[in-house]
Length: 157
Image 1 (cartoon, rainbow, N blue to C red):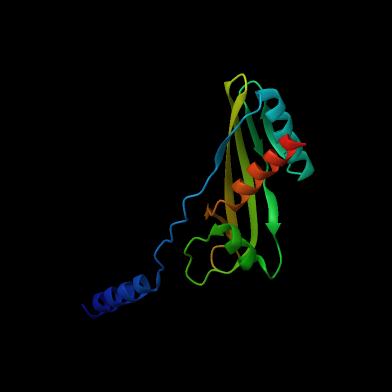
Image 2: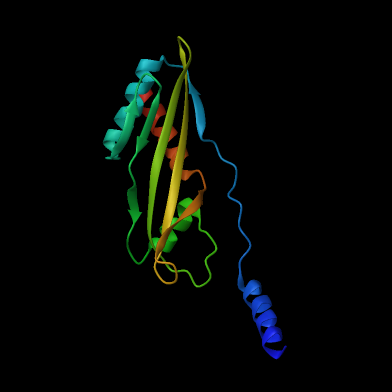
């Protein structure tokens, strides 16, 4: 009975140490461009090439591009860099040493002069103290907004 009481108390103590999940703010991850599909597709591919994002799959007919993981944090400043782009998962005593993301871009022809683009970033952080594994993070929309803005800039040129 004494051992059971100790286990219950320990369980409550550890549960009290967990952090509540933080919800990422809502953000824009899609935009309609007043430009035909082919020109918008060219701008999307140019932005990916200029940023040297490694392509996993590209299918112009279906309007889909996915990238392989891109490492954006691998220094002693990793936690700060990760926090600037995402909400880290709550891992008790977690130490975040790396950050990476993949992109999924979906372009769709709305009509002859309008193209819709949706960008999704899948951000992960590497925890190097307890789990020694990658954990998904909630995006804050910084990557998506920058990508859409870069497309807009390309289309103005």
